[in-house]
Amino acid sequence: MEQVRGRVRADALRALELNPGDSDAWIALGSLNSRPSGNPDSIEALARAVQLGPRNSAAHQRLGERLLSLGYIERGAHAVATALELDPLSGAVNSVQGLVCALQRRVDCIQRAARTAAALGSPRAGQIEAWAHLAAGERRSAAQVRERSLRAAERLTPARAAVFAAMR
Image 1: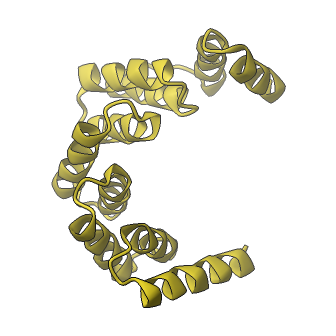
Image 2: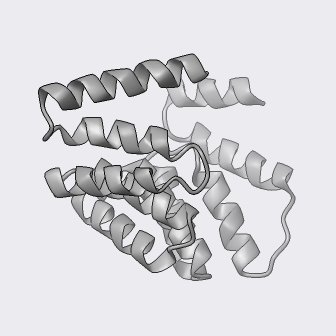
């Protein structure tokens, strides 16, 4: 795994040498740097990606995820909200919005994010639904939530249903 990360890092740095304004390369570098806990370089790289690509929802999403993981809830929520404005149909962004809502203990928001993520086919929809139950003080077993999310996913497309069936 470290070899793959090393190659991706080298490719991202090479891309930045050729074009320092490549926001996708900054996203890659920031995502790689976020692996070790507490690495501040990841926030700097992801903030640079947002600065270079202010309409790049992936840059805002990754920055938001990183800020949330370091405990900067309000700053992370703002970055995720911006990503959601830019790409409201992204399953990944809606999944992260569910995390923001869970951290803020906003049950209605978590449920809305779970429904949206499920409708968009995000594999994290069941996880978001579990957060909603926890935030509401309900206890559901992981197996119950997983089974329910698998049943919901089967209604999406035949191809996706086959993938989820293989997970059982």
